[in-house]
Length: 395
Image 1 (spheres, rainbow, N blue to C red):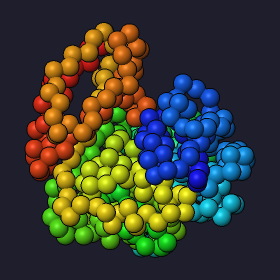
Image 2: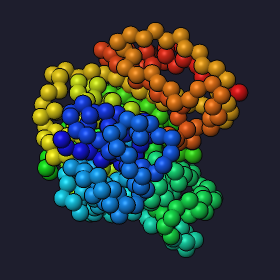
Image 3: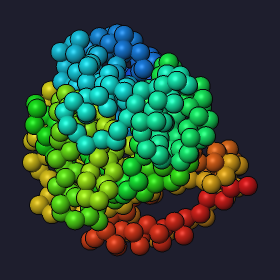
Image 4: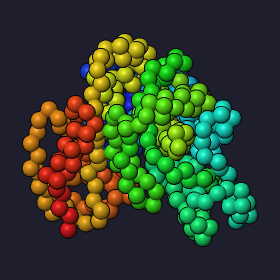
């Protein structure tokens, strides 16, 4: 029996663990200690810091893993690439993983390969910041190169905001530099993709529902996107170029994009499946279990066999994080939702009495809802209806 070692033990990794078990693999979960559901779901638990490549390599050797995988979080991507390369396991290379983890290296790779991306500069101090302000056009966005999600990212519409937020970024990053780039104001979208033995099996553009919390934070997604075919084709072309620019192979891919006046720009990408219900977005749309594709490839089985079983038609779907706009304690949960085939998932991470935070990033989510239906508009209406009928009261 093949064994898959999963990096991370939070809720999304439980789905990956369960998918591996369904395929007949044994499972080990690798994570720091904590109250995480993955420990109960897996056959074996190994305690290690998944941001530490040597620790993950040692864990993979210890449990005699036939494959290593993760999804929905960036923390273990570098270690994943390192362990896979050292052990000759399927997966992205260490260099590709490093490029995914460093926005400066990524932007340089995009530029060298002709990928459409915003103009940018590296800044280390006040002098380089002033030079960047002279060279680039406002509005600008400051980014820590080594943080995930929306941490260390600030949109700046004037020079004073740039200077103030530069200090905030440098206080958060572990590096002695960050990047500043022109903020392209347009339609935000994303894409999920899968590359196997150098061939991109699919690129699925998806719409993004965002919440402004310092920067735009994705809180939901939907497919199909509402865009002209020319924009869809441009998104696919840029994603393919970006994948090859970074050197990604044998991995799922998560891409952030923005479209302005028909041109699609790549913001960033990484060699793992996206979070915020995106594996479910892919799975529902194609009529398959996307986690199973990730697990199968990791242990050396052919994911194309699973992808070939996808349905002929495509199923529209939409998802949304459940969140709070204020910090406080969960007082009550009102649930008047009628469960039917349109409700793919409605789940909570909190209960009455739990302390919750005002939403700033995905770690503050309270739960999620995923709906499916005949078309995008149906999904939007159903999602809005559920959000009215499912209320988390915070005091």
